[in-house]
Image 1 (cartoon, one colour):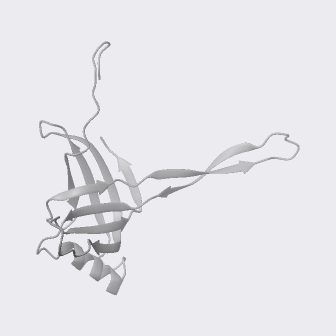
Image 2 (image 1 turned 90 degrees about the horizontal axis):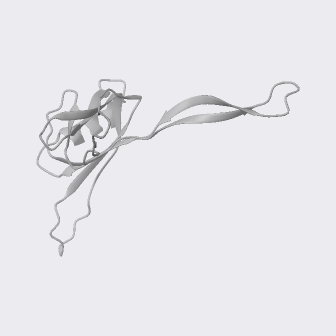
Length: 148
């Protein structure tokens, strides 16, 4: 905990790593942690003249992962397996996104359970360009928690 007068700078978002259950994949260039929101419902009881707000269901967005395209087929094979067999036949995996500080220490961790791919894509081919090819995988997330 920071003491009075101690300045705590926010972490920079360019140092992170991913853990995907059962897959050994390195070199992600971008990860978008899903947003979380709670529905709000208006409620008025009997003779109340004012409506109250009640919390409803929580919804979780998708996890988007991007990395340079290599000869590794791991992400594509995961997507292909889910597209052929469904997410419930071994397609769900636990994923963690870990923010790392400048000294290389793990600082912030989001754990996501029962994720499965819903979209796989790569960048377009361009004979006049020199950018690296990027493969993108979007994952449906069942639960998410920030544990540190």
